Length: 160
Image 1 (cartoon, rainbow, N blue to C red):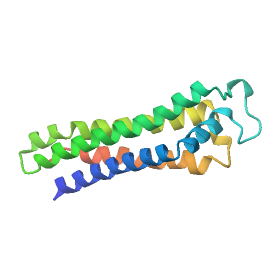
Image 2: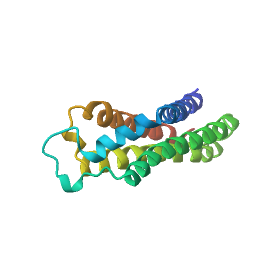
Image 3: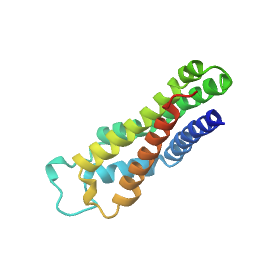
């Protein structure tokens, strides 16, 4: 039963990645606007203007980093889910080995959420100052990152 719940947790991370990437794609202009709002530092007063940028290359790189990380994490989790499902009745070592793709997918997601949203957006572009974006962007990224990291710890734990 524990193995099934671990597989379901990985399915949830894969689903998060696919759904959020799909939403980024169907509202690509909104994705670009959100990254522009963060990098331009226009949603709050008192910004260190020398750090702000509306450079289209920076905005596209940031947006693609988010999108491709979500897709990559989702695909890795899906591969891990399939591998874990196929060996769910095998010995502990075999099941543990099957988790590698799933755990890598979780790591990619946490890396994107931490480095992209916390390190770059919050720290460099001072998004923590923005009443408009702090909740919907930073608190969401922290919540997703924390939950996915917790899922990785649960899934990564040794099985009997």
